[in-house]
Length: 232
Image 1 (cartoon, helix red, strand yellow):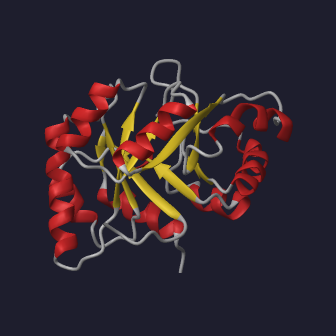
Image 2 (cartoon, one colour):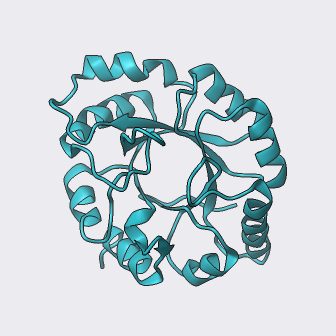
């Protein structure tokens, strides 16, 4: 549906076509649609409405973002129902999904797979490359990106809090060797995203609550966030 640019800019938790229209002029590469339990959760049918709108725009020659469905430990039937109503470009998995499951999703639906890795907000020390390799090598050939997110005890991610960014370089080293992209989420907002990109150069950034006001997506904050990813 779209040509991916670098860095990836993903705005997660969009819930209606009106908001899509309001941010369509921005260089956003991915939009996240939440299927997992959350205050931002959409039914497959509602998600399908967003995707139908984007596809109609693409059919008119407009550049549109890729659609990313966010799931936590989905069953095969849950995922099948979601994909039937809302044909996503990317499936993002935030639970304990196995490499075999990730590979099955890629092959069965012809989508990219992003796998979330949760990092403690108060990580005591930077992990070694050996430790990261032991954690992630089994996913090397079954995912397209690793999403580093702050651990949340209820949902796994989506906490709205940053983690210890000094962990990023060792994951970056692993990802470069594996040919996998590294995305960063967790507590990002207009005030800190440029600092993250300048210091750590991830392949992409993912934001949700950091561009909201009172739990609602804020166009001004989204615009400011994107402008600080792509400063002039």
